[in-house]
Image (cartoon, rainbow, N blue to C red; front, side, top):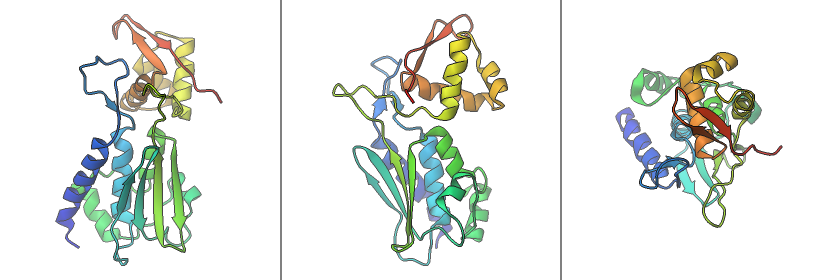
Length: 224
């Protein structure tokens, strides 16, 4: 296997997926490009996971299928040894291709730590299902897409647990800052900013006024 081709394969597939995602205007002007319906980071994590942990003894490609309601990433080889879907969701991992993993960790592709990819993807997008097909010998990640109204407005059904807590904090204090939210949940400001942006895109919250003197307004909260 030519390792130098992996970055090109990764970038090509990522570009293909992003090109086929719907763009959501949110609060941006009608002349703006808009935000992808699903954060790019989700597909970065899932694609790196597929390319690193696939079974290279099986002569088959990683396959990508894009449907109106979901995107499927199918990797050759089921989960190795004692790994289960429940275990990988909480960060457990087994290196099927340790030499390849070591090269990836040196910057060949985006890599943020062994066992963290699935968790990071789920943090940014909770509606991901996994199928470990041991009889068919393949592993599938199914990313559910944003549902649409007839007028193509998004239906908010993608608020994860952290985002629900962020909304609750905003309801208590409409002037709460990114830093206060980061301190409250023990996370980085970048992480909070990413989730805030998704909430804005999904029309759950909106910003009224400037960053310094304005405030948040809760527009919609997912029913449980």
